Structures are given as structure tokens and as C-alpha cells.
Image (cartoon, rainbow, N blue to C red; front, side, top):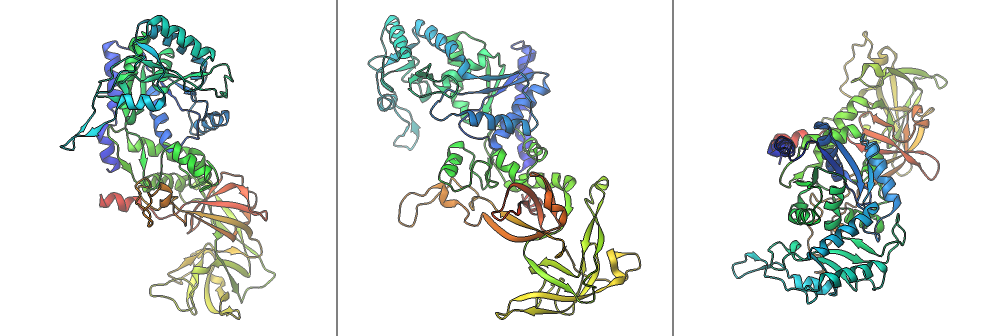
Length: 576
């Protein structure tokens, strides 16, 4: 689906629902929330979610909470909380004094569970997790290959009295039972076609230390119970969530109705699916734990931290999520469009510099060895206020190895014996020869310069077809360059095939073995020596690069390639 189609498919359907609710008097204000679980770092799919949450609140003059749904102590940690807050702030959003934690609601949630038990709508069950699944049943295909859901079976403990259930639930809280020995389940309908409504578990026993509440609780509420009631406690009018929760909505409404609390409304939208990327914290965690990447902030990761380290800007990401729209059905967005949004942003803001990734010595034979000139270079042709800078020029320069060919291919306009090119911002030079080592490798290119052609002045009448970049060998700064490609070769990494030995494939089989190339001996302008981490430049003719927080093992500054200069999105869009 193209971006244009996606926008027209349902960009405003959420706001239309909100308008209807306000007009009908169901609500007289708008209050949303972004509810991450602190079990991993946020990725670009979360950007779409909190963009919708915050922007809808802003559009209707309302508020948006940040609430951590932290009811799963086995996987949650304060480090994830801090990472999530840092990334949302970096993206430009502020929740002011509206930071909440579901773990602060444990007593409130417990009392609501007791209330539901007293209404005869919940019971303590002794079945194991495996037995609960067996009793619930599963969807199967009938003889016509149509999916059906045979009725489940009631638990033998389903008809316990209210008094017995209250006593057992109190003992669960008091820690009188082992982990998994009992659960609290909602009493709904074991024949319901929606399997989620077949007496879902509300509470489980887990003796795990919670990062905020310590060991004060040994029972923890399940997400489907906690989430709607936390929304209700905060007075959330519109609980905006991804489409996978559409099937959960009847359960969301059941708990609100039975607990007799504020009637928050759940509205679903299509989640973001991006080509060449996995968008699940579960799979991203596997990449980190199994060391396929260097960490959550690896520049190949789709996490906000990874994108930031790659050189993405908040403005580019917000532009992307706003332009893809809010659809009602899932679709795949080509990563080339994300790159297009980034390129559009960086083209306006990034300063230009010259750097050489694979250096080859260029010697100007008719230049005085002691002489250095400073050439005036434009910092950003898209921004006149960015001004100009002076770049040193000397007898020996570094040029890209690919900018010279001993025997040039057809339509090659760079350096080769007898040919002339312009050195960017400097002079026209003519190749007079080259040097080789004992193995036949070219070690240096020799040329002469025309002093009348400095900077392409008005008196310069010579016409050349090629312009190449350079840095002065005498003044250059050695840097390490990290060249990144897509982490996954496959457009849809989760679509896997069996391995040659017949064993099941995994999504990691689709990892791109060439997703990172490290170049140790790149050379840059002197201005790159003291660049702060996060500063993005356009390396002329090469692409956009960002200063990484790392330095190389031998102390060189590290620059990550953010993105190339060539725009592939326009070609893809035109084909569409």
C-alpha cells in the first residue's frame, strides 16, 4: 500500500470516533495514555503509538498520560523505565506530572477483584496452566477447512461459593500457596466463540521481586484485567491501541462493566510494519541476548535509541509516522519511505564536509611542498545562513580509491591518465601518471594543477565532466567509519523457510551478513576532530554520517553512516 492510499484509508477515523463521543455527551473531555511495559526499549512502532496518543489529546485540547504497565516482574526493570522516558522526551513529547505506574494500583486492583468475586463473576481455580489451556480448547479446522471453536469445558472448581473464593483469594495474597498452585479466573462463558472470554485468568501467583514493590506482593494481575481498570482509574476516555487488541476489546469492556468503573473506550488502529525489520520486543531482545547486535542501541536496530545513534532526527521520525497515517488494516510500509523522510530532513539541516573512506594519495607535482592554501567551502547549499568554512589544501591529498582507474570503463569521468577533473572547491587537475608497489597495487596518483581554475572562478573557461572530493593529507583527521546496511536481507524477516537439513528455520536466518562494514583508515577534514556525539554531517558524495559516542580501539573518532544520498523512495512510489 502506498503512503497516499494509507492516508486516505482511515487517517481520521479515530478523531471521528472521538468527535462522536463528545457530541453525544459520552465524554466531555479527551484523555489518552501511552502504556508501555518496561520489558525492553521502545522501537519505531511505539513511535507511531505514542504519536497517536499524544497528538489526539493535543488535537482535542486534552491530556495524555505516560503509564508503565508493570505487572510482570519476571521481565521488567527500572533501566527499561529510564530508557523509555529518555526516548519519548527525545522525540519531543512531555507528559508533565502525568507519570503513572500500574504497580501503584495493586491494592486498588485487588479490591476490584474482590468486588467481582462478590458478584459471583470470578473464582479461584486449582487447574494448572496446561489444564486451563486444555479445558479452554483451541480453534480447529472442520471437514470443509473452516475454522471453528468447539466449546470448552468448565473447571471442576468453577462453582465454588463466593465465601470460599474470597477466602482462597485472600490466602493467595498471603502467600499460602506455591507458584502456579492456584489462579483467580473470571467466570464468563466456556462456550464463547472468542477464546479470550473463556474464563480468562485475572491473577497468578509469582514469587518474583518487583523492581518497584519488592516482595510485598506474590500475586500479580494479568494484563487483560489490569489494563482496562488502570485506564478507568485514570479517567482515560479513549484507550488507543494496536489492532491485535481488537479481539481483546469484549474482555476490556467486560471487566469495566463488572467492576462498575469509569467507562473508558478502546479504539484500535493498525500497528506499524516496516520492511527489512522485526517489530517485537521479544525478537529484538533475542537479537540483543544472542549478540547478533551490540545492544538495544545498535544503529541497525529499529529502536529509538538505535535510530538516534544511526543519525535519525526526531523531526524525520515524526514526519514519517504522520505521513503514513492511521489505518484500520495492517499493511507493510517500505523502509525506503522512512529513509526518504530522513533524507528530506537532513538535507536541510546537515552541514557538508569532505571525507575520504578508502584513501588513495594524490600528489600535485607542480605544487610547492611547503605551501598550504585555504579553500572556501559551502556549509549547506540549502541553508544560506549556515555560511562557509575554510578547508586546507596542500601538495598531497587523499582522494577516494574508486575515483581513479588505470584503464577507465566507458563513461568514466573521474581521474585516469591524461584526464582532467575538478577538485571540489579547489582547482582543476590533470592526471600525469601513477605509482605502483611490488605487487602491482596503485599507491599514488600524480597530477598537475591549473592555477587559473581556483574554486571555479569567473575566468575559468575550462570544462571538465568530473568533480571529486578530497582532504589534505597533511591536515586530515583519521576516523573510523562504520557502514551500515539493513539488519535483515529479507523484506519480511519473519517469513522463514526450512533449513537445508530440514529443521525449522528461524527469523535470524534472514540476518544480513553484510549489515556492518568497519573502515579503519578513513580520513576527514580537520573540523571532524572534536565533533560531539550525535552531530550529523553530509560527507559530500558519500552520504550522511553521524558522530558515534564510541571511539575506535586506537582512539579515532567514529562516524556511522546514517543513509546514502540516493533516494530510492521516489522510484518505488512511481512504480506503485
